[in-house]
Image 1 (spheres, one colour):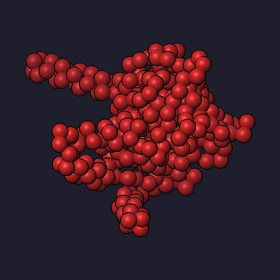
Image 2 (cartoon, rainbow, N blue to C red):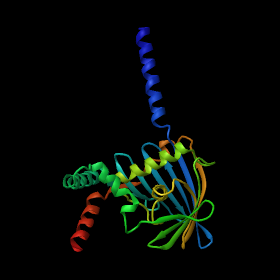
Image 3 (cartoon, rainbow, N blue to C red):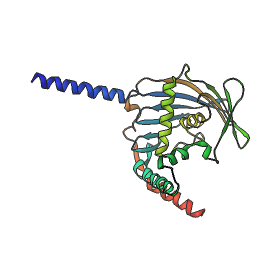
Image 4 (tube, rainbow, N blue to C red):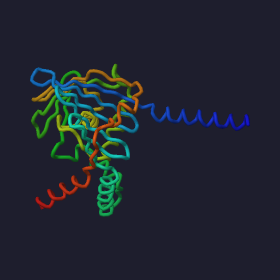
Length: 258
């Protein structure tokens, strides 16, 4: 009997330990958006090994974009209490089939390599930003030769983030692209995506982003444990699966412009 109790205790300890290890990666990154010289929005990015959630708190409205690993991507309108889902199983199957079909036509390249190429900013001519260092800790982002925005940055490690935390954040932002790119169109790109794209040319942490329309300033970074209740969709919010209607819309667009 004592042996059984000991075995159960060991199993319970291992279970708790494995859960702690699995959830050891946590980051909360907060930015403030200034528009027209006035406070426009607070942006809070919360990341663990399962969730990548970004909340936009505006003056009269809160919006959220969120990826739940292996489930899909949500866009949440808190005022209307609605959450719209793009189902991972459906979108990934379509993307995987397309990558495999492309890999079959090209020698010595895998579907995973095609995915890596597809998310490399240099292969996206319509949105590629080239970054040039100008002065101390400053980058100028140019699109087709014209200045698009400026970034003040810190090298890693810094007072906000260790190299290990930065590398993990990049890996989660990269992994997030496997789930699509449904996001709230307040900014041109989610900030986690901006950090990922900049890293291909300069492995730095943006602390200020200046565009013609707004300034985005880093306020804080916290690595404390994030309770899942802070990440999950709140009770009472109505969830709607928009996957198939979104696919049909994109297919109709592709047919229209053939």
